[in-house]
Length: 59
Image (cartoon, rainbow, N blue to C red; front, side, top):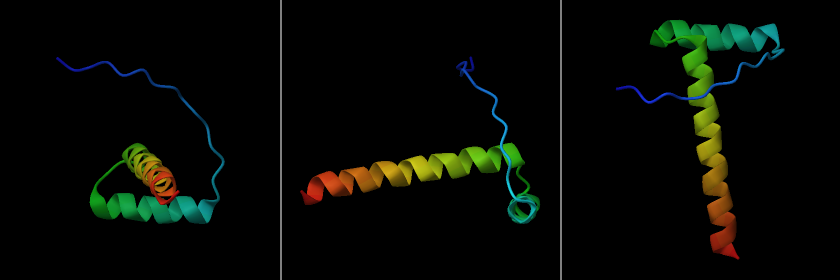
């Protein structure tokens, strides 16, 4: 069985030149924009988490 995940819909205003770059990456990798944004968000969250850990360890 698939685990149900609660989701929220958002709307973003993003400059066209950035969307064009994202669309090019999506086309080259055969992924959807949605998948790209989810992956990018997860990468950013992981990076933030690692930076927090580094800050705590350095203290």
